Image (cartoon, rainbow, N blue to C red; front, side):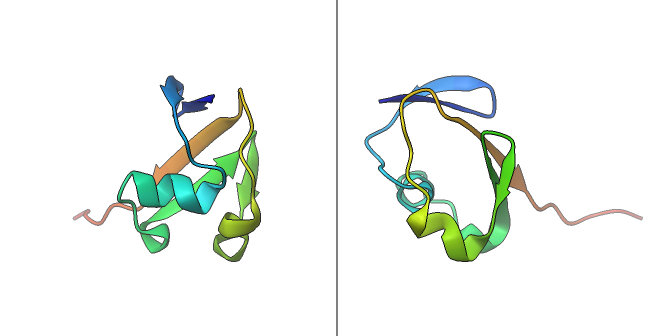
Length: 66
């Protein structure tokens, strides 16, 4: 199926957000996930199914500053 990840159309075989993160080697603790403009709790990633055309935003935590 095709989904949009951070604005880019990508093909995935993942059926849930958790599986999508695993397929991209992303640790759930290092990212916040939005699915179709709704923030998804980490505890709900495995229970959040993906479907054709979903829009996913992955927001990564970055350290730094002055």
